Amino acid sequence: MSACRLLPCCAATGADRTQGVWTDGTLDAEPLMAWWSALLALAAAGALMGSAQQVHVGRGSVHEAVERLQPGQWVWEPLAAPQGPLLMVVSLPRQRAFLFRNGVPIAATTISSGKPGFETPTGVFTVLEKDAEHYSSIYNNAPMPYMQRLTWRGVALHAGNLPGRPASHGCVRLPLEFARLLFATTHVGMTVVISDKRATPRIAPAKDLLPPAAPRAVRGGGAASAFVWQPELSPTGPVSIVVSAADGRAVVLRNGVQIGSGPVRVTGPVAGTWVYLLQQKAGAGSHWLRVDMASAGDPSVPVPPAEWNRFAAPPEFRQAVARILHPGTTIIVTSDTLAASGAGRPTDLLENEPGPAP
Image (cartoon, rainbow, N blue to C red; front, side):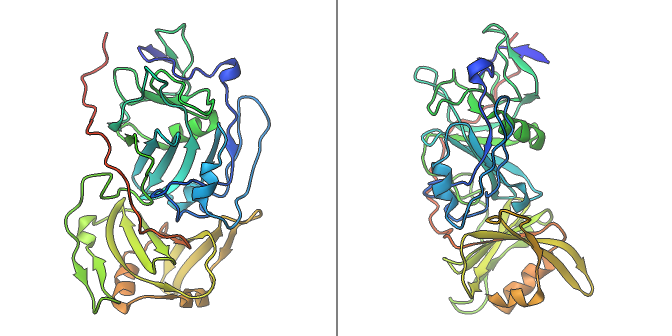
């Protein structure tokens, strides 16, 4: 354990201890993840005090579910993107935080940020230090479980009381169990964006959130079949593909970088969100598992070859995508749109301070 000059923004003692709840998520993230429909279906409880609670999401939209989250509630669905770079986005007006992996949202939580006079700074930060059992050296050794430092001046992510409003001395408080899971998932150097905008991206990185990448090359036939394909932007890494039935388009991400997009038509009913996970790629064919996040039982079933007949795309685009698939690849299919980004550019503040003060 260690003690440093961090404010006890959310000491998790007594009444401060908040119950972690798995919930169905509806987040009105306007430009957030309206598409992330049933993706965050299961969320598990695990609180310092209180019993476990589990709520399954139905076929509705997660952007509404997350908006209804009560203080201390959170969702966590890492299977949507098992591998890839991590990015956390904190929206101060919404009092919500969202975790992306390989550009795909995998978790969301309620938070409590800095109260008036102790506002949480906005900007782009990196995790500088981690300490699972941390105590404040200023405020009576107040515990700050699962601390992840963002600045040497006293701003961090950690578990603490979530009263449903900004109430900390500048830190970002998280539910205890969510903080534990996040601590086990992240690494020193992970990017954390804290924004004073309500809007958050549906996939990340987004051009409005992070510096834009090089221009994409469009290849293919006419407007209806034109697609974008630039695998050289990210030559290796985990692959995630997001298919929006509403937009009739797919976005391909590799190692968190968008390397392509193209038209995809999905036939038949599309309700909510589900995930295909590539388990094995062999000469005889690929073995996929479908994970339906709206299921209250075992949500995973093998994918019959005929199911792929529901998806129509230009042959060149399908072939290009097929060449980069490997075990662990996920395809997220959603009824929602990816079109509206609306992510506001965060305040231009990149923490690059010297080491901790004595």
